[in-house]
Image (cartoon, rainbow, N blue to C red; front, side, top):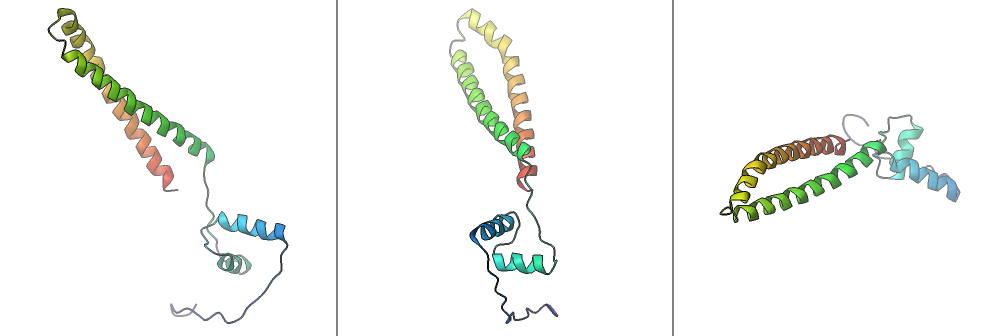
Length: 131
C-alpha cells in the first residue's frame, strides 16, 4: 500500500492443496483474526504479522462454573427473600419475632457476601471475555 491508497491486486497466484492441507489451512486461519484465506495466506507468505487468538481454557472452565454459581446465588437469594417475607407475615407469634430478629443479621450478611461474589464474578467475566 502506498499513500494510504489500496493497490490493485492484479496478479493471481494459484496453488493446489489436497483435502488434508486445505483443512489444516482453514484450522490455522480460524485461530487468527483473518476473515478469509487469501488475506491469511498473503500475510503469512509475505511474513506480515498475523494476530492469533488465544483462549485460556482453564479460565473458560472457571467462568462457566462461576456463571452457574451466579445463577444459583440469584435463586438462593430469591428463595431466602421470599421466606423472610413470608415470616414477616407471622410476626404476631412471639417465637417468630425472635427468629426474625436473630436471622435478620444473617440475611444481611448473606446478601452482602452474595453481592460481593457476583461483583467479582462479573469483573472476572468482563476481563476474560475481552481477551
